[in-house]
Image (cartoon, rainbow, N blue to C red; front, top):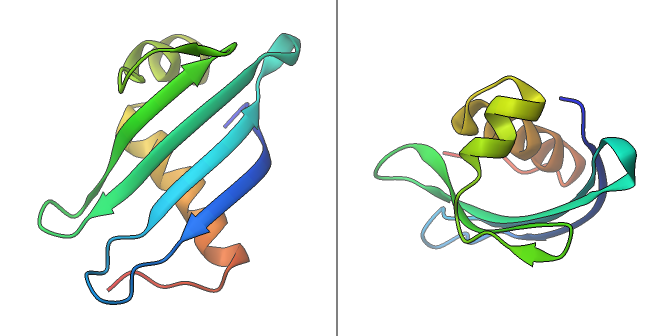
Length: 94
């Protein structure tokens, strides 16, 4: 992963096992990337809810960034971020 995590807001949901992640990343050339995503237990995957690049709202369309810049799928990108955040907060998904 090329982007570096700068700030994290992590909201675990112990009842539904559906944690929310709000992450600010610093990309190459000093650009900032904000992603709000959560884990969906029924699908067993992370889903982007909001994505902003350079302060511009891109909705949930994260795929253009992950393919062009990070050279990975959205699923892999979000899993990588979530693993780092979960480790920091000592949180385990069921």
